[in-house]
Amino acid sequence: MSSTAKRERILIVDDSPDTLEVLQRNLTAERYDVFTASGVAEAIEILNGTALDLVITDLKMPKVSGLDLVRHIRENFKNTEVMMITGYPSIEGAVEAVKSGAEEFLPKPFTDTELLSAVGRILDKARLRKFGDATPNQLPPVHKGLIGTSEAINKVAIAIGKASSTSATVLITGESGTGKELAARAIHYGSTRSSSPFVPVNCGGIPEGLLESELFGHVKGAFTGATESRAGFFHTADGGTIFLDEISEMSLSMQVKLLRVLQDKQICMVGSDRIRKVDVRILAATNKDLHDSVKKGLFREDLFYRLNVITIVIPPLRERGDDIILLAHHFATRFAAESGRSPLRFSDKALQSLRSYNWPGNVRELENVIQRLVVMTDGDIIDVPDLPELCRFSALRKTGFTRTLAEVEAEYISNVLAEVDGNKTRAAEILGIDRKTLREKLRKAKQSSS
Image (cartoon, rainbow, N blue to C red):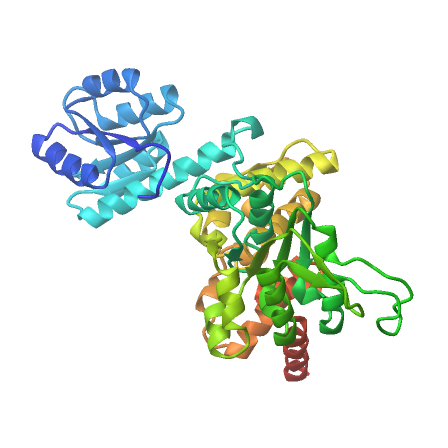
């Protein structure tokens, strides 16, 4: 059972006391709130007084049948799902149950696993439907700048709150596109430095020969082209916070210079002998395993321990459950407003497809997908055929095990590039590689196809 704000409520309706006892015991063990009724009249009385998420009802019961109860629920309780169970299974009975509004039809005898799987599927669909029907004002509020209610993201929010109350250095780790800079901003703006600058620096996006100058500044004549003195990012961030993204891409020589700043709180502009003290909090981020980089001699161990005072791990989107749906609604609402469009809604099946996709590019990939959907979808409802091909079911893709690993990789890279409109820098970030590696892979793919 997925973690939610409240325990889901289930009513079991069956004229067999033994069946009621077994089902109640199994579902209670899975931390559902369980109610029981021995007939339809008793079930309706409970329905009228209790908000229920799911009703599990037997088909054949004395006086009033389970089908009548299904119809009653469908016409009177919009947010309650129904599952039919029966000891007299037939195709006609299953069709009639589904027509009446039952989400699942489970013939007896069934195993505990079959029961819990069916219940899980129904409640997952119910949650998606509730998100789909929600207006922007009804969606959960944003906390710490983060959108989501999953246990994984709640842990991040708590960690951010604790990190904000200190001046310690923080190392933020996570895959590309998970929102590491968003977490860094939340730490800064929740701290006592919030009125001072927050300066983000992409260490992997600045050529090695220029990074020292960009960070610490330079004086006039320090190198060819230095026609005037220029302050660096540490000067700009004085009193505030500097965010060093992709810290793992920093050369060993630059790591030594950064270590001195962490130890002494002093910087020296390129071409100058003058030392200047700075009051800057350092937050760093990486999508790589710095432990492994230290072992390989690619990252200084002393710098790692200096940075790793507090560690915050941002979970990948695929581990955040229903947060995917919340984020999809958030981006759809935002991009629709920017485009001057009325808000778009998602069909239930589109939400299921978004929820089940693996999202290798994480929140950044989801944001790109939703922006494209808002631009390209003609109607007011986004359905499965509107989604990118990778998010949709494909019978051929599911059974296509005759391709080589290189062919699968080439196809995936091509799809990622298509999603980011050919932007190789963003594609490399999503793929977790650098631009040089991406260019090499594209060259090899071109050669193999020619």
